[in-house]
Each structure stands twice: as structure tokens, then as C-alpha cells.
Length: 23
Image (cartoon, rainbow, N blue to C red):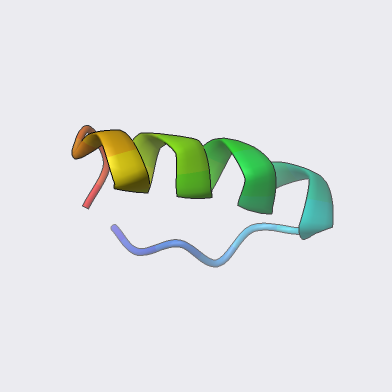
């Protein structure tokens, strides 16, 4: 799954992406 959420989700998505938990 990619990162295609709204602006609010973008924050969580980026946080997880930077941590390397969600790719």
C-alpha cells in the first residue's frame, strides 16, 4: 500500500514513512 491519504493522514503517513514502518 502506498501513501495516498488526505492532508490529515499525510502527517501520519509521513511520520510512519520517515520511521520506516509504512512503505
